[in-house]
Amino acid sequence: MSTPSAPPPCSHLAAYRLTSRPPLRFLRRCLHVRPLGRPEIRREPRELPHCSPCSSPSRSSSRLYACLSCAAVFCPAHVASHASASTSGHQIAVDVDRAELFCAACGDQVYDPDFDHAVVLAQSSSLPPSSASASASASPSSAPRKRRRVDYRAWAPDPAEFALMSSADPTTSASAAAPAGLRGLNNLGNTCFMNSVLQALLHAPPLRNYFLGDRHNRFLCPRRTPMRRRSAEADDKAACLACDLDEIYSAAFSGERTPYSPAKFLYSWWQHASNLASYEQQDAHEFFISILDHIHENIKDGQHKSHAQGHGDCCIAHRVFSGILRSDVTCTHCGFTSTTFEPCMDISLDLDAGYNSSLGIANPKLHVRNGERSSGGMNSKVSTLMRCLERFTRAERLDAEQKFFCERCKERQESLKQMSIRRLPLVSCFHIKRFEHSSVKKMSRKVDHCLQFPFSLDMAPYLSSSILRSRFGNRIFPSEASDPDSVSEFSSEFEIFAVITHSGKLEAGHYVTYLRLNNHWYKCDDAWVTRVEEHTVRSSQAYMLFYVQKTLYYKACERGTAV
Image (cartoon, rainbow, N blue to C red; front, side):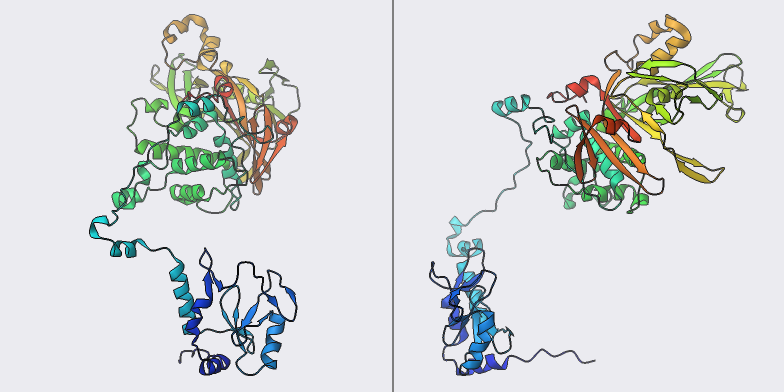
């Protein structure tokens, strides 16, 4: 198969080269190079070229051509007529603003090696002398030395800057219509689950203070060392979600209001969770747990493991979100109780609409707690967060298939199991189980019950100390006084700051985050951020609720972080 041949050269340009006296390379003295390196035909500073037949200055969008034979200037509409009306040699012109050859007879650009060489020489002569040429002309003693690499240094404020930062609240430094850090996130293809969780993390006060306080610097992270200093095994784990999250914090609090695209964070998460690397819709709760686990793995790899990491002190993810649950299993035959403790990053709650499904009777109690008044006789389609927590901490009888092995009876016995909260985290995350999957019926559905939740929440009734006091009285508390995980009265009070909602069906839904900033609510719907009223948040289908300890909520702007 023969290769295609090059197009034949322009016959008009060839004729011009034969008849013209000065070669085209001598046009170099007629060229002028602009500061950015763009060549043009040299002219007087105040000269405004225009088409002779038009007799008026041409618009900036129209090209102008100067005839190489008579130097007359024409626009594209008259350059062809000039070439046909004149004798031979007037077909070749040059673009005044671009210094490109143009054949008026062919109506196309033409190329000449001599002219192109002249343009290159004009451009090279306009550049400043390079370091290589300067070093060649200078003496060896005055040759420039190689610049020494300067190590990165963390910024430290001077007294004036420190006073300015101390008087400014990062959450209120902007206008009331747009608080600092409030920035939309672009949807990268069914990534509303990621955007909703990231918005909640960006405005969690302890986590925000940690990253904005330069506690994790992506430029100093050991996982981001240069490639030549990193082993092959470490190269496989180069992606650091904590570094990418630090970059998102910098972008969100930079003052920019245009939506930000967290593509780098998504790619890093895909590297950690390869089984979820797709553009399909994912569960926001599973994503939340996944990124906390990977942040924990990223940060603890570069630090010494704490002796108390089992209690949630090993990394920022656990210091902020990790609590401790207590599980008491009591034998109904002899009364022996087995107690176990387990850490938790969140609490998953069943929607309870005032109905005790295990006993099959309505709950007759009247509750007045946390600013909500509810009774068992209200609408079965409405649940409250307090009833969900009461159901979570209520003693339940284990069925025959879950008989507990009693160490005192030395056999399996029927038992009662009760959950309680031994230690509260700085930020409590409540996951509402809206998606039900039945292996028996082989079907899945979404629970659309409305959930009523307070903005101020007192967690004291659901603590282990309160549960044990209701069961055994005050006689057990002398031994509990020295418990390091005991919760004070103030640390049991929480304020809500973020709500993640899910709308739509199980197969096709959408996640939206509501943020509470400066006692105002803002709806973060991917790239769109709007201010909404309180009733809009209360009427939404809450899927994840984020509460922060009240002392941190009102003092989040202080320099001393509580992590």
